[in-house]
Image (cartoon, rainbow, N blue to C red):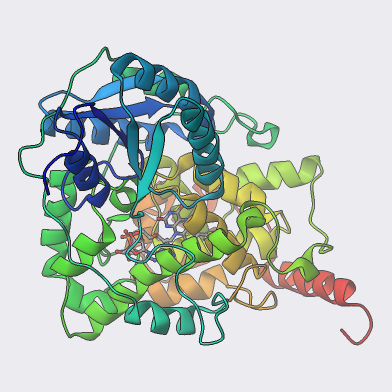
Length: 474
Ligand SMILES: Cc1cc2nc3c(=O)[nH]c(=O)nc-3n(C[C@H](O)[C@H](O)[C@H](O)COP(=O)(O)OP(=O)(O)OC[C@H]3O[C@@H](n4cnc5c(N)ncnc54)[C@H](O)[C@@H]3O)c2cc1C
């Protein structure tokens, strides 16, 4: 299709920091004969609650994106309403194109931007989404949203899944005055809740290389391992998963591209596709339940007693520092501190421990994860927490409590994962290194934390609190 106007089109990069398989970018290129102004807006209000590791990954991703645009990425800092209004006025652009954002804050922002631009006679055009299937699309036969993953997945598989599109040919980037991308870092992680106390803020070194090329190399490397994914994905001590989550978070690769490269008929391929679909399910759940970022989906659990006093804050910080005395929990929390990433199995175990054994509010734990995670994503994180806490849609029932010691024995039987992150246990063999306090091993007894709680007492306490909420016969 030939370009239609002489005015430049503004392409607003958000969660699609790539050039290939970017249908919104194709649309922008189609619209303007003069060229496309590729813009990224540093929004201080979003960065304030973003941890420094994720901000660092964003910065590296943007640097890589700009390099692939001959350094023509235009960067502005401020409220998107003001930035876009000013840029449209100064360039004469009539259309701003972006990939749709389906998270509550993004949708509210886009509504404000759309209104402000419309008043100037400028259109905000949203195309595609960060998902294979746009959130809100999948419906049951009765036409209602799916509250449960399995039917969602079945319907999701039947939705059209268009093949990836190439980089638009002859794309001409327009230049404009630009701020420095490095402005991102000082704006990140400035708004911390008081219960974080003096927990560390600093960025973890980026273990996962950023940018579009790096994302494709990760997929290529994972292609030889995906057939074994079904078994390996639950073992935190081995590299059994793709590590694509930060790339999917920032859109340096689209899940369409991942699935197109990793198609295959093994059980591993099938399970991997279903994990990608979990990401889509959670985006769909959030789309239909926008307040589930902070409100229980199961409102019947609203009255469940959680602790919030000074002792609760101290317990929270012991958990966050990885000093609980439960090796798998501590290994996970230290991996989060050191790398800004944590294995999925261990995310479930550490989250369950906070809610069911420490009787703390899942929102505190979710906030800490969002603060530290390089892949922190409001849909997957808040719904992952609600699932573990038993408050979400299609959640693990509240009375199901992960035992961190049994989980360690089952999924890290040789203790490789625990020993890698809990240095006090580095020379303690399994199974002792998997036991509370490092077992009875004399080497570990003094250096490693004593278990902060008795698992069976606190499990009983969690179930008592549930019974108290349900009332007699509940
Ligand atoms: C309490 C809790 C919090 C979580 N917070 C986040 C978060 O903030 N951001 C995030 O991307 N994921 C989150 N997850 C999901 C999951 O842990 C990560 O997506 C996964 O560990 C990322 O590693 P990977 O890319 O190697 O995954 P792989 O196993 O290789 O999976 C491939 C992709 O599928 C998606 N995926 C896999 N498992 C899940 C899942 N259970 N839920 C949703 N998507 C999934 C991810 O996009 C992942 O990158 C959370 C899970 C829990 C239990």
